[in-house]
Image (cartoon, rainbow, N blue to C red):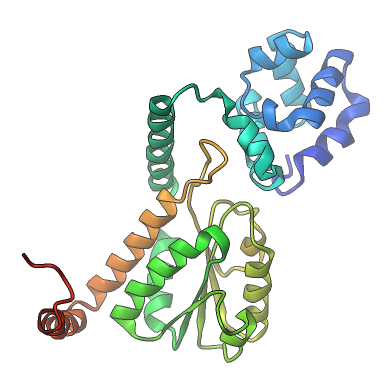
Length: 286
């Protein structure tokens, strides 16, 4: 099956060839993909009045190797299609605060585990090398991704002193990246719902000859299409809020990896900082 093709378009394209029972499934998904994404094959069949085996055959008819692959594709779809209101509606299943606590933390643990299991070692190594070789580094992460961009940029700038965090402020976003060039690196951080401005900034930088590396959740993310390398990080949502726990963990790993390559330099830097912190009482040392 064509991975980069919209699932909705595939269903619409295959609809005339489907059996009567499969058409009922297709109609339900087209109208309620936000609900169908989290239904088992049995539950979906029960909802539309067909057998579980019919649901499995429906998935095969669309080109999927079983229902779980179709379900995963549906869940990828809703990351970009769902409005915040629809996400809030999905959260109605949370019966109490303790249920929320357990479900959210379990989801975060699973995101980190999946990211670790699926991480491309060569992609990570390539990213560290590019960071160390870049003349200048621009980090672009807007809206909810701002938190990751600020964290990554703050620590990388302590180690390297050539890092710019592109963010909303007194100057326009494009003004902050205006001088980007061929020896520079742009790290984009982009998770659903994807910021259009992040893609535009990365696209501008690419046209100026800069290298683009993206931290994102999927090879189908808009920035992925113009990136030299992609660090794929899981951010599956437990509710209306996307999880940025795994992206923050990956940002932390990047900082530590770069720091270990510059161990002697940062030791000298932190020795000076400790003197300043102590002299000006930056930290409470009671």
